Image (tube, rainbow, N blue to C red):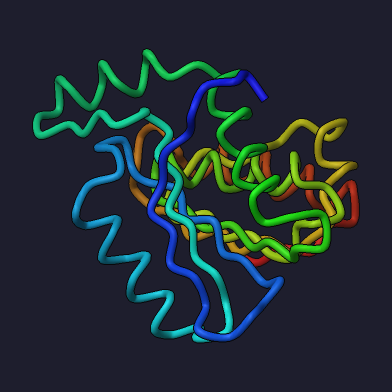
Length: 175
């Protein structure tokens, strides 16, 4: 949508399929570990197209400092355009599940919200959950959230606020 080329790692299903899994990387970027995760999911889900989206436009961090820099430099608008570009590639009839870790976990739920009726499932592995009830009204799929118990950033209070908002909006979730 912003007329910039997006990047990702695309594993096409061996059979024609309108089922897609969008994989969102950690703060490190679309590195070899994320490519391996995408390949593992493609093997586990043989009738699903898997796209590991590159939210950093080709940058991959090898240090915590670089990961912090890349994450902070990533703009919401650019990431939303990358998600929309992948959805456009998948097509209007695609059923899309989202999955992400840490930085990508937060983007997994944001993508599920953005994809509206095309979203069929969302997994947040240790990512920032959404707790804005106005935004959650538009959520159309079940969410599985896997959170750490002793983290200081995505802590029990943050997860509790998310659960309260999901309950208030009568959204299906599991933590």
